[in-house]
Length: 115
Image (cartoon, rainbow, N blue to C red):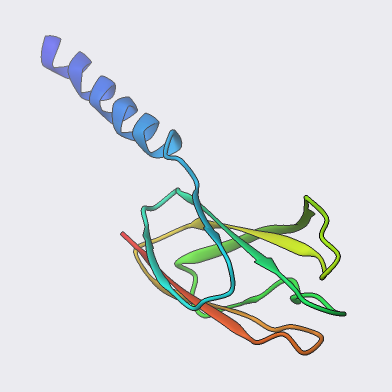
């Protein structure tokens, strides 16, 4: 009897560990590879110079990563807007996220390895 009561507690502890994982935040336009765990939020903030913005939603190469939303974030700077893209690591695998700009800023590609 006692053993049956312990199993659900461990199951809840595992879920709580995933839910409490800090978001993974990236800033800047350099291409990089990062590792996230299933359930973790990934935030990518990109700034622009001149007219235009990074298109939303960005291209995501696999269902390992799910696009949540995009928001313009401060502080405001004269060179152009800063955008924060939010994703959730959904399943083990690899996703390449490609950000296209509507102006002359470079394309940015980030790889997220989900474990």
